[in-house]
Image (cartoon, rainbow, N blue to C red; front, side, top):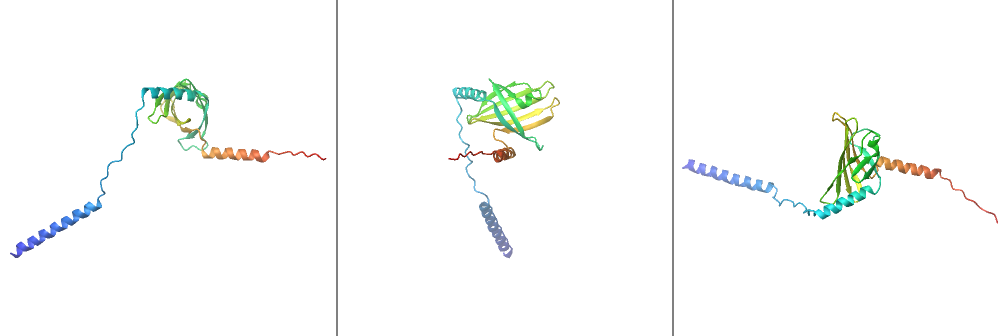
Length: 192
């Protein structure tokens, strides 16, 4: 009989311990929450896409676009500028034209947020290629440009914006301040 009581006490102890362990585990586990809802994006109609495409073409053709090239690699002093010109859907890069790259036609993709992505692949006579991905949103251009040689090795990679990098803006401010300091004012007085 003692053995039965000892076994019952041991089983009771195990059952209580298991119950307490399960309760502690439930409290430690994070409560399940409903998954976050993705924002609802309305699909654009064919007419909206056509209107945005026309507007994009008109906008990019309206002027020469000066952009600031920022290297994707750590090459000091490499950031510079480029002037992008569009004629219809054809892109010309002043920077790459100097390296022998020919103008190229862009494809325009309208995004759900009504921005436009222009993409093109330029080629040079040596078999090199330059891929452009240009985003036009709110009248501003930005994007990436990557140049490969004939063998397919990446030679240059840039992201570009219409806003100068901090060091370019600081340099421009210094130049403006220096110009202002050297400007002299001449005052003429007349005696009565």
